[in-house]
Length: 92
Image 1 (tube, rainbow, N blue to C red):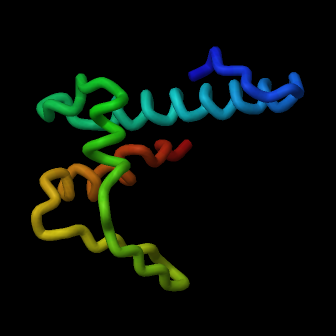
Image 2 (cartoon, rainbow, N blue to C red; image 1 turned 90 degrees about the horizontal axis):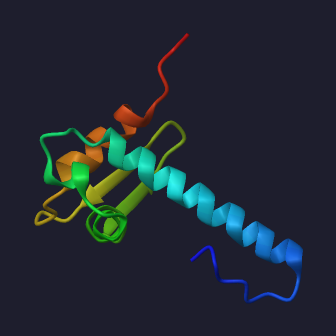
């Protein structure tokens, strides 16, 4: 999608390119955080988007945490639970 320059403004097209680049880096980081024994560790970005991002969950926010409630039939719920810990940067 980085070749799409549908805006008249060059600045708007540049912002679009930066956003697409950031999304690519984020998806690459998520894929690298998935344990290698899982089939999603080598999946394409479209598959990751469908299996990890486009899911239904109930989000409950409190002052100290955010809780996600997945459907009982969510096949990747355990992977989604372990990803935030794997994505945290290591301390100094």
